[in-house]
Image (cartoon, rainbow, N blue to C red; front, top):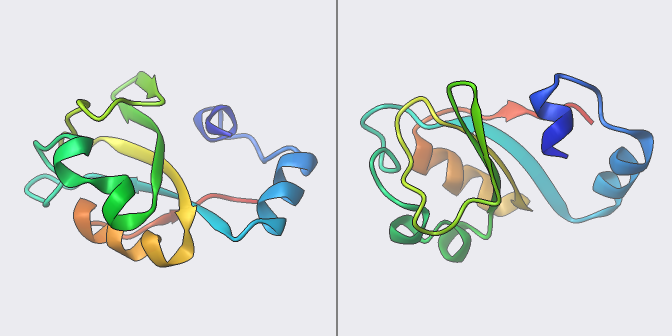
Length: 105
């Protein structure tokens, strides 16, 4: 799924159908400088535990980190691609201090 986002491509119809049938949502957000997430690791933030959202990838500049570890430290400007329950989306966005960018399905 991150490949589609990284390359600006629409989701493959099979991937789109699978996402529509699941109770999970995908979200793309950017860590804002000075936000709660800025300068903290995924483990410190307890992203998955607190929000239910799983961070699939982090983009920092031109570089992507896929399946980041808990020790991955977020920085202002990092772009996150995450998946999880709809109710966790707002919590993740609040941590990042930004509004979501919908991932086209």
